[in-house]
Image 1: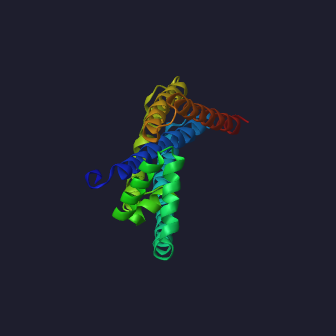
Image 2: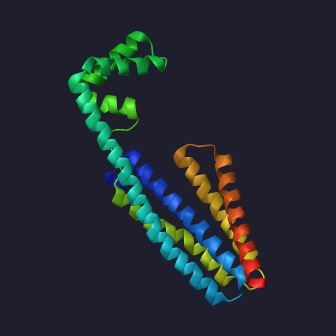
Image 3: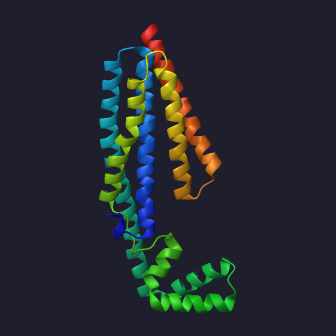
Length: 227
């Protein structure tokens, strides 16, 4: 599947997979730790985790499908808009591209030459890219994005579910807490690599959000189960 995609499309699908795994880890961790706070029954914890995994898998896949389709609708509308603009006012679109290149600090002579080359070669791709920031020849498939989430969410869910089920009774909550923190650090790091964001802050945000989620759900579960 990935061999047929452009680099941008591969990055989008990989980002969906990483975020799906991250959501799987965090969502199911919140569920099983919350239930563990209320009950010591391994069966109740396991069933709750499985239910969360199944619900989250379907929800993530459908959400990704709808989101990517919405993005494609916007892109198609932008392409139609630019086709009309090029047909009715080519000079205005040419000048827009030229001014964008000049604004990026390109020397006037070089900017004019680049604009002439790009507009003569593929004016639609050039103006769409400069106005809207995407390549009209590259669309992320909603089916591939949904499939990536459908696979990655339950894959991420396995970690907290296995940890809370397999660790001994005395340490299962803190051990799961620690395992989830490590996993969230890994997915946070991968997400920053794909988005080229600040690695330290990206990982820190992911870990902190996971800690807050688990503390809140455990606290609520504890209060419900003991009062």
